[in-house]
Structures are given as structure tokens and as C-alpha cells.
Image (cartoon, rainbow, N blue to C red; front, side):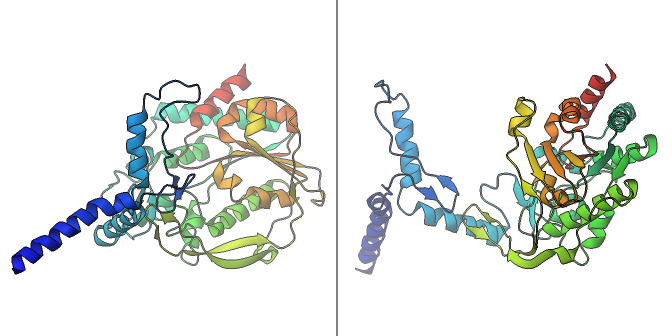
Amino acid sequence: MIEKRVKTVFCGAFLAFLVLPLLFVNLKPAQRSKAENRKLAEMPKLRQEDGSLNRTFTSDVGSWIDDRIGFRNAFVTQNALLQYHLFGLLSDHDDFYLGTDGSLAYATDAVIKDYQRFDLKTDGELRTIAYSFQCVKDYVEDRGAQFFYFQCWDKQTIYPSSFPAHVRQYGEESKTDQVIRTLKEQTDVDVIDPKEALIRGKAKYPTYSFWGDATHWSRRGAFIGYQQLMTEINRRRSGRYRVLTEADYDLSLTDQGMTLFGGIHRPDLLESFRLKDPKAYRTDEAPLYLSQWQKNSRTIYRNDSAGNGDTLLVIGDSYFDNFLIDDLAESFHKTVMIWGDYIQYLPEMMDAYHPAVVVCENAERCDRTGRMMKVAERIRR
């Protein structure tokens, strides 16, 4: 009798497991999954807009059921939480991993290869890189501007414990270390390298986040880089420009922890820097040259209270564009930020903006030395 009841309960539970998800299918249009942070598939149509037969109808139905089946969000969330808490794994991590210290790490195949020192430059390549940088520096300064190279470092260099434990390093010097050493030894390029300042700074402040943005420095790390850059610019430019201090900001702690697939979230209280009295403003200034790089890959600020008529040209990436460009704009009459992938247009940039200072900035994971060689070739012609 007891055995029969157990079987009945088991069969009933099994049928409920099969039927209930179908009864609770999500039929609402234009829905997003909070757990997966993506748009759910829409109801498929047998015919396309032009009246032709939808040849992918059956697979579209399968995708719609997969996305809309009842309780999917709960299962996705619980599975992700189970893997995270029991095994320290991230579901559908999309290049995000957990480091040995439990923090969030960003590790594409290229980043891993670089971390392991499997992409080092040859001595010949380094000599060519040095020669190219020197050509660019000489060209910029012949045009009446000061040239600086700023090296940004990714999280795993400043916080090695943030990288996955199974990834081993082979050697002390990375590809970026090689380039910086070579520029210092073989050129007179003004190289600004905040690595040691960021390492020292982490004893007091998180210079990179623990569970927040794993692909950039924290706002405090950016501020350390900013002050080193502006100090060096002023050293070469006779103290011409204003340098912001902590007193110029309202500082507050905010939770900047990321929420990952499955709704996994860990609080990460980090400093937010908000300028108390910003003078610079972003403009919609029309491009002087109607080329693709200038229309889609530039940001321009103006500051009528800077106390000078100088233009700063930054050729870089998101380390500056997302964190520093508005701060730098407080020191110059005009500040122009152009994406580093377009550095081959340097002569056009010089003609368009007539900068007093040019800063070429590069993230560690973005090797643009090849592009620097190409612009050097253009300059030499």
C-alpha cells in the first residue's frame, strides 16, 4: 500500500514537472531575462514579411520554447548559484573567471597568452617598435607639440592573485614590459608608466575593483594615473596647467559590483569621484574632416576657463575615454579624444586640431605597436 502511494506521488510529481512549465509559458512580447541579461526570442511566424515561407520556422519554435518555457528564469538562476557557491564556477562566463582570491577576472585567449608570456617580441621587433615611436615623437614635436606615451595596465598585472589559479606564468617580463623597457632604453620618448604607483596605491585603496569592472582600473586607480600624467606634462610645460586634487571632487562609496549570468552579485564598495565645479563641457563640434574615424571615434571638450588656448589630443582607448577625459579637459581649452585604432590618421589629426600636447595611451591588452609602425611609415614618406 505504501509502495503504491509512493509510486503515485512519484508519477504525479513527474507529470507536474512535465506539464507545469508548459502551462506557465511566457507569452508576453518584448521580454528580457534579468538573470541572463538578454532579450528573449519572439513568437516565430510561418511566413516572413515578404510573404515567403519561413524556412527556419521549426528551429525558431525550438528557440522560442527554450526561452519562454515556464520557470526557466528560476532554473537558470539556481543552476548558476549552485555552480558558483559549490564549485567556484561561473555559468556562461563570457571571458569572466574567478581568480585565486575569489575576485572577478577577465581572461580572453589573447589575455591568457600574454599573461603566460607566450607572445613576447623579438629583439628585431623591439628595435623596429622603438624606431617607430621615435619617428612619431620627432614628428609631433617638429609640429610644435609635446609627445607623451602613457601605458595603462590591466588588472592581472597589478593584482596577480585575481587571475585563475590554473594559468601559470613563464618568465618575469611580459610583452608590454619589453616595450616599455625598450622605449626607455632606446628612445627619448616621454614614457609615463604608472605600474609601480598603482601597486603601491593598492595598499591603501583598491586601484582595481574586486567584483566590479574587471577590464579597467577603479576610479581611484584612474586618479593615480591622472596625477602622474598631469605632473609629467607640467614638468615639461613649465607648470602651465591646472592639476586636480581630491579637494576638487565629492567622494562617495557606491556598490560597483557586477551582476553576472544567473543574477550572481557581490557587493563591491568603491569610490566615486564627482567634480564639484566642472568647467569643461562636451561639444557637438562639427568634424573638420568628414572621415569615418573622426565622425564615430572622437570626443571633444571645451573649457573657456582653462586659462590657456591649448589643445590636448589624446589617442587612446576606454581607460581614458571612460575614466579620465573629462578630468583632463579641466586643464585645457580644448580636449580631443580619438580612438587608438585610428592612429594612422595622426597627420590629419595634427592638421585638424593643432595640439600643444599629444598623449598616446594604450591598454596592456591592446597591442597597437603595429599601428604605430604604420603611422611612422606614413610620416617618413
